[in-house]
Image 1: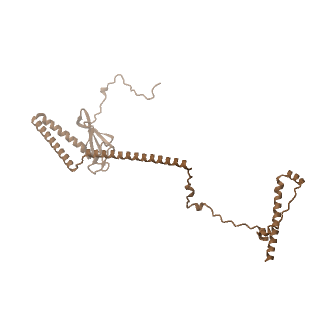
Image 2: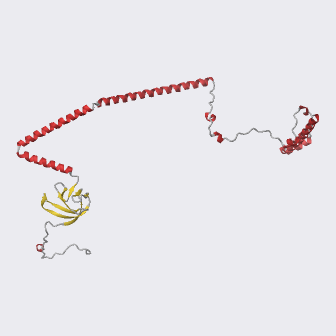
Image 3: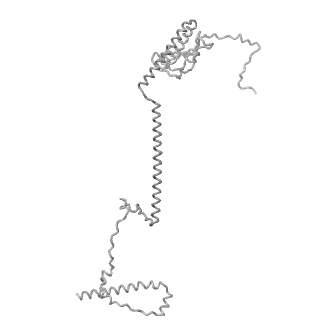
Length: 321
């Protein structure tokens, strides 16, 4: 099966690549590329801050007559986002960084500039000492003198600090440790005394309980919860029961009460009934229901007889008066 998209080209047998004409492009030609700002910068024209990582459509070109170890150096042209002023910077392969060239100033460069200045001075010094031995001796004497001055200044600062703060840290730490040990010892002694007191109290209580049980049984202690009264107990309790008066029966209100005089006690005489053997045999078969049924009738007869006696006693009292 043949390929859908053919990538190979047909070259005839008499093909000569030298006969192909070459395009003559200028060496400083520019290309439009998309890039991000490699560092923080500030525009010199309007003072606009351009932060690292902001995207631009830049023009790129190769710097002529500049290279580092065969690596080409490129220059980029961007425009300020506010005033459209042109800003240029180029690559720095020696320091793996970028260098600002025109139109803006790079921020946060103090440390880098200081390092560059120190490197430059160190390089100049090495070049001077390479061909001048007297310069080497002078530099050594200067270095030793500077070192002595630094040591003297350090000693003065130490003495000044000792004058201002006369604190013996070792003695302070030692005293702190002694205080901790003394406090720990006191706590242990207090714990031991408390334990002894508790043991003595428990032993005395046990002795008292044993002595009480030998002499007489222990009295029950009153329950404090029952004797204690709360303010809300009045609400929970109902009204106090009033003293009940003797109830007067209806027949007492109509007929009158019986006299309690001893002279009327002999007026009532109870009749003795003789037991009937036939009735006794019949009553045995009936059971307790007959007995319970005859009780109301007997009670009613007794009540009527008492009422008659009460009326007779009242009439007799009125006649005597």
